[in-house]
Image (tube, rainbow, N blue to C red):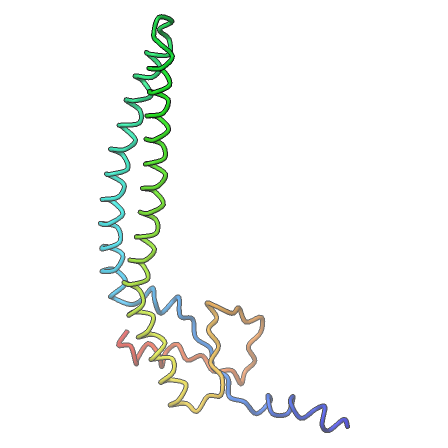
Length: 162
């Protein structure tokens, strides 16, 4: 029974394990700068549009304050101004949500080819070295890597031309 219980440990002791850090590789990729520049340009456009919406809201708020301070102003007009403020606020929140969603989608679209390229190089390095397992330390922190663990970063960097 003891031998059967120890079998998985013995098998793991024979496993070849490599480690890489995909985030470090991603940061070294030349395509990263291009993707970041495109995302920044898009973000700047959204920011400029949001500032226009904010300026529109601020003007409506200032107009409302003037109307609200006028005791002779009919309640119907005051209510319409409040409604305009609420609609403007709703429009800003909706724009902000849609912009964030679009930026996230664009980030995924722009970074996916880079991460796919990195993953392919990691798989290739693992296969070339006959590794049973390759751990990504960017995703799963490794508390300890013994002397039998092989750092595949140099091999993967070479495969990626870095």
